[in-house]
Image (cartoon, rainbow over all chains, first blue to last red; front, top):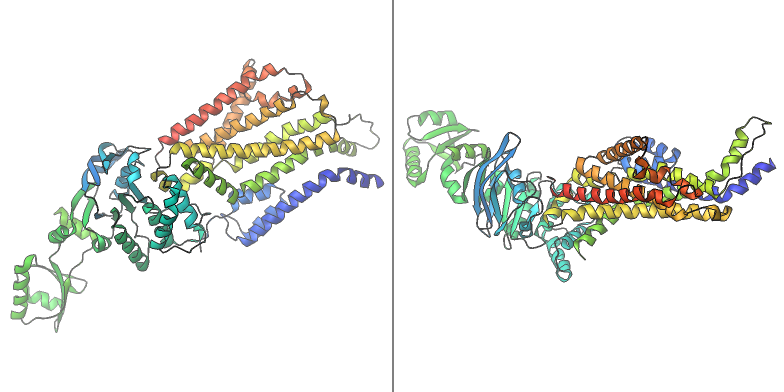
Length: 73
Length: 299
Length: 254
């Protein structure tokens, strides 16, 4: 048990930036999905799940192929 | 001559879209380029801009020959495509700034010129990005960018066709205003738009130019038709009563259409109506749809 | 401002507004951390997965393991993501017709191609430097890097290969004028290079060698002179492809 905590502390210098970057990107993307409800295909729920749960490929897919760039009313 | 088109043909594969066009437009005129959809209007305009190569023939704009690809003649030209596309992330001002840099407008001049044009098209003070623009706003921004470098020739492809009547009137009045500085060559399939502001009409039909002259010549050639309605008698009765009258008469949309070319014919028709006791309720020149005018010019 | 700089500025603004800067910065930072992390955690993971009581002799990771991770992650994940992000630079403009107005305003067609190439190359440089410096910092902190040979030269090979792939993508995207045209060109080229590498003698020029054999540079097993051919061929190919793209685009009917 003690061993595990030691290990965790040992890897903290890697884990902190990785988690900050991935969670940050996921949150940023999720906010974008909610505030710009225009998608080239799919719906809001689908894109929210994708950007939150698929690490860094999800946001990538959203910003490259999912995001609608026109405000057609 | 601002535009000189000599014997231009354009083939796409086996399909000959332009069949030997000769066209000369004098400077400082507004020329309406009229033809049905698919007559080849956009193709000829693209040839004038060097966007597509001509199959045979030559085009000269303000004395500079047009070549395919990069063409020096474009520095005399402002162009508004039928569906102008802009970068959606720019505001109108940012976009015109980019255009000013590309067309090498001196910095000292560009900022006042851009302000002037935004005023002309009614977009000054609008700071929103282009992705939020309506079709009409894009069309107006399109005119602003086309006029930026004070071109000698403004080419507009169907500038009014996708707009509602108010937007249409706006565009037409901007074009009229633009005439102070430049010649305008604009295509439309709506003859009445051309009639409102043009000095000159060029008419394209199935790849051939069938008419190219002052607007009033077109009137002479095609008009002389009047629509009458009558008090007390139905159109059919009136038509029957005039059965033996030697003029071309027909019924169209509840009105009697009489073809009366010249003053003589009009006077004698009026006299005849009086003689036969027919009371005119309304009378107006008969405006025909484009297809009919085309048919008449072809005749 | 001259038109070339003006259009470059537009390309830059567009890339930022379409979130390319954000995505490239985040993804390549993640990759930069991932390389030393994977090197360091692999032995511990292996131990965990082995059946209880098995005696295994896993050597302690070294700086070399961290850089070998760099060699597999940056081309396999990083470059693929990068190419995906930048594979529609030209077709997007052609699809939407945004160039027509600017070209009739006198924008040179070569300017369109060269600014797009420069912006893509600048992004690849940024992405690469980001992943490189993060991996370098971690590796220097945890391990002794003096065992490595020619580190700068070895990673430059990966950089150049990436640049070649981007140039090829831009060419394919312009010639085929569809979103996947560039991707297709890049994928087919990589497959062709791998197949060519099966034949003896091709490693004298095959650019794929920049990826597959340059780890040998780090260990000192491969002499620098092995890379002269692939390097020259890659630089030449970049120049030829860029020239071909300009040539093709000059004659393109829009």
